[in-house]
Image (tube, rainbow, N blue to C red; front, side, top):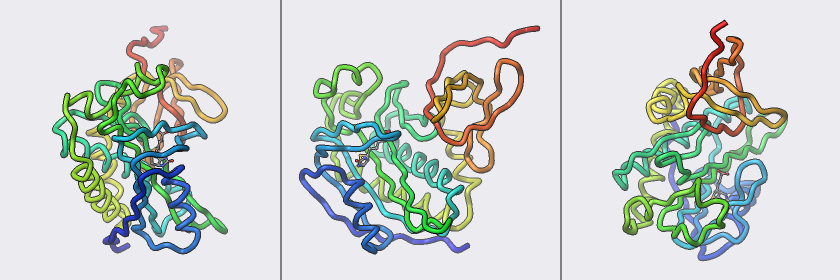
Length: 257
Ligand code: BTN
């Protein structure tokens, strides 16, 4: 596989319902790979698992279209690659310490600063396009967030005690996305996995993973070669989780019997 060099075609909006919806429509109408939709605010921002994504002014709300030659089972690889890109962009443009919580929430001090939504259009078992949505609470005032989100959410402005230029953050994100995508499309997933492992706060911790059908408690041992999470359960058995939401638990002990 040869790495794909991506060229960005950027559409900017002041306020729209969701950059993800617009990008998906553009992609379905044949928009090229590298089509990017950015908005200053979203009235109906979309999160993972059908959740709402609160998108006030000051954030970076961006969706990008990719047309990789991958199978649906490889979509998780792109999800992790985008997580690495977003974390790097945040670290490089702010100097803050940021970590990845599996699969791809970016956290600062265990509070979420960035969410990623990867959506695939699959036809006859083939990935037609991917739309990757990245939401970064950049210059967001925490006081503008709904109260239930405040304890678990942070923003770059809150952490830095100053505003950061959104353009600088956007450029950093697009550059890192370019690099990770070149690696992935060139068939090089191992370096992405290595970077993900170096940036995560999930491995080596007890977690509670909510999957679409159940909640699993286990020790996060590693990722497998496809990016699925390998959990060791209290009875010593291992399970591999492909998709879900992880909650980090600070303490847990194995039964000694
Ligand atoms: C999550 O639930 O963690 C994912 C949040 C993804 C939010 C971004 S903001 C830009 C893009 N447009 C949307 O409507 N959602 C994504």
